[in-house]
Image: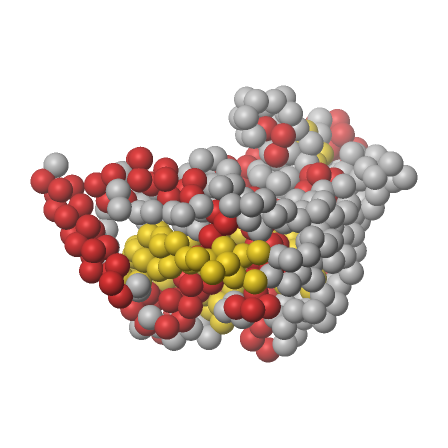
Length: 462
């Protein structure tokens, strides 16, 4: 208890000092748990974790005209400002020589009622391989208020003026990251990528269309599993300003944007946010994937060395059951996402655009077209769908978030034997499909050996 009191007094002292200077201060004393549920200590992967508080003043935004589906909005800052106090969580390489100059700034997801680092969980192995730093931002009121309630000794002084101010908060925090070398322990920032998944992706759509053209802080954006519109530009208690359904990402940006969509994201958005690739835009639709899956829910939280690839292969044979109507999807979502981050980073760094991808095929009713195994046709491909041992899709139902989890339906032994008369037949086909995905640029070469080994170590075929 005395230790908690000391931490609280120190944090309160830091915040008091910050109010007058409006800056970023830290690192804070390290607690036993920063409450991100990442599942492992980042020291296991050669990283350091730190936490900072930010005190700044933020503005909301207005638009004189209704927001349009083309995303080409003109907004103006409202005259009044509101103070905020929030936190950042930083993961960076322990050895400065390992840092590649890239910082991933994740708008943390608050759908569950607290901050979740979904991008870190799914793509951290790629961040670590490349030496990228990751910063999780508590950008929304739900996350900040949950921290205050869960740990008042540490976070009781946090304050959020409401999500209408979240966009300018995200700008101010990006500026602080660039201007204050202490955030990354003196590591020089060369590229800064803003990212967010699901509801955070919706916030980013609005940020990109409304705020980036006047703020110009981030060097690129990864919009992961977006819906059919952006989030409200303003909301209660301020006047409501919301974008229409079918809002696209504006096509006149000065930085690149990648949109990465799972099967059910494509259908849930009613196909309305598909837009053509361009010199600054790419859209990848991922066959055999779900909005959230086994890797995000359980496997990625303890995958410190890429061994999750073998675990995910096993989950196609013995699926994870989470109390939903069907077992949870065990597709290649995380592998595609890692490739997307790698491609976007290279796009920003050297101007080489990511590969263009075919869209998922649809029928006349706006549903995905499927093959004889129930697997989606088109989109970006992996051996999981081209050499299948289970039907992987984005369909599920049941309590809580089950509708987002997709499903895995393993093939019977008879079905497997008919497809793969011998084990070697299976391994050869899986290996060839893996190489095809690598050659196409949708799976990274570093991930291929573990994928091939998982197939070789299985008992599939014959």
